[in-house]
Length: 259
Image 1 (cartoon, helix red, strand yellow):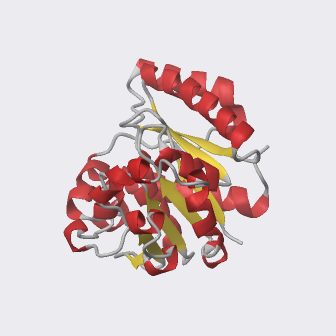
Image 2 (tube, one colour):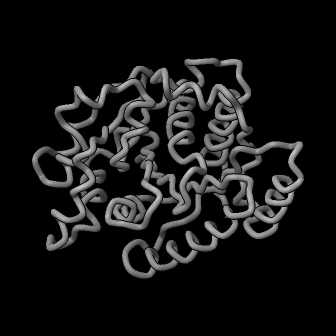
């Protein structure tokens, strides 16, 4: 049985999609079958893995509206062992279309249940808001990876997300756990960044990954080429940091569980 992990933070610009693209690609290099699900109507995860959004005929929108089961929407990417449920702009209207549908917050959970044992990990990339799309991701997931940008306002975002997780546990998914806190856009020369790291580690302790993702040009350039950083510039600090994170996650899930 695979593990479903949602990449979530209600604050935008913290590296959710960058993390989903590069972590999933790094894990796929270990010859693990990985599935990513793009639940953001902007479709940055989709394009970041080399999928032409204008050429998509089946997408997550079709899964939510019942036109196709998720099995028929899964698409290969440019990375061996890495598959995607792509997104299109049509997903913008899904919350309105499903407003009166019973069990609408569990649609993704029910779809994933049929395919979960085919993949080592399923990663869900969420938009930076608490709407039906993010709620479906949180309900479907076993755990959450929270990217946190190393700046002051990210600490406020963590508090908001903690309250959201408490609400989701109470109403829909009582076993939802924090898989890990990932510190992103870290610059060791920045005093504030170092202070944010200290504060996050003080509060979340062993939940914080040892790997920190640095500010890196290659991580910013790779999406415009439709590639994860490991294919764009494998020797870059950004690519290497996500390889390190992948190893850390494999070790954590293979030898011991976070407490």
